[in-house]
Image (cartoon, rainbow, N blue to C red):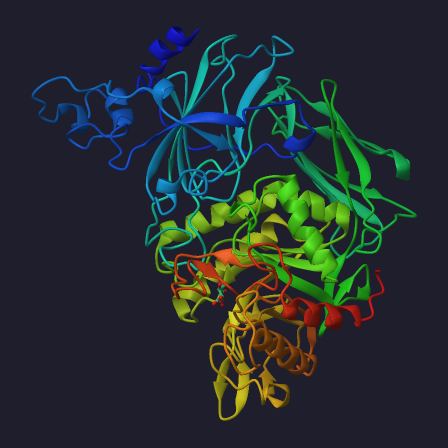
Length: 609
Ligand code: GCB
């Protein structure tokens, strides 16, 4: 077996198929017939992309595809069309899912290409099945090959993608190869400048999905916008050859509705319901929903709630709600790496619960599906965001298309999660016409993909003539006016904070999407001394006094739940590569500010507890 593997692994670059981008996303992989490809994968560090480009810097993929292309006709002194100088079997291994930076010391700062390979045997349960390989996420760019055949590529480090592999999988000795490349790029999303660690690799689950030849690929089953008694949505079947009957049932609500899917594969439906038990933080009720065809029954666990605004109020199921939140990065500070599984999600959301939160801001990119499914079950409302962060290349059409694609992949994956109440399209982007055009495009895209949720973005405030002003043009286009402000950390006096004056130009709900300051856990001093827990504690006291008085304030998500790694944080003995604004330290210890925030939340009455 070992030698056979070696021989086939040498055929890695025998690319037979045309490069294609990833295909239509399969949703609800949690309830499908799947086989994990997680585990240990061999890896090769390839900073010069030697496995991808030949000595004329021509991609092997393209050489193999087009033997009369400019590539092929380039002058070659000898035949170097296949790489032989590598050996996966003798190479070390990494855990998948997982970032590479935290698994091998020499990869801590690595940004570039790593090749991964996993071998597997597989026999489908049914011989007529279709097979797909699904990646929860690869940061940032993935090129994927199965048994030497290029399946395609994907760009965007935080969203899922899949490829059909029907007919390519054999009973034994399959080898799946991924080129993961986390090089940053000026025109990418995010761009080169971020305040978080650029964790590389196959950071989320990899699975093989087995489906019948015609299958339920995607659907939405949610309360219709503006209605508390009509469930509406759509169903998409893949490979519809004739009209098909599909049944949507919610046994607990005694719903059983037949719909017909025509041969374009898609149908929309509406179902009247009575006595629905709404999802809320105090009662995170999920119903078993079944969608069935003649060949398949797909289950999901779905909560039903409405989320709307009315003037300055956010209404959950028609009742005003205050968002008691905290911002979270997708990182387990205790393991010092990307959060990758349900245990990591539970650690983070349990901390948020302990703080008294009913809401989290999952910053600054879509987190893994484990955490949003857990938020559904734990009753925590969620702000989900795409990494349009700071200064992406707003004038660039490709950058916009990339952001739109990441937004679509996030919404497609999560549109049935009751916990998600807000799609955020950006964080702290500098206002200009070209930026407005970019963001308005994303706002419209989000609304077109999912009209049932609120759309926002974390904006900024500015200070003029003794006034804090929020007048970003985007405020006119968003459902919620959210902005970050760092009074007492990046300027502004803490002493005067409670009396600060605010001029917010929009009659909409206001969320302070970030505030905070850094403290090294265990460092003590006076409240005037930066980096001490006492300074951070005072900063929270004063900011919360200020926030209470901000007109139309309907929630906040301070920065941030836990200290997180950031290459921008250079101060020796204090930061050492960590952003220290966590209310919990990198060893899980609550700082003093944690208790100030908790007290503040505990005293806000909440109808939903
Ligand atoms: C911000 C950013 C966040 C940073 C934070 C900070 O405004 O949105 O990503 O980490 O400030 O700590 O400066």
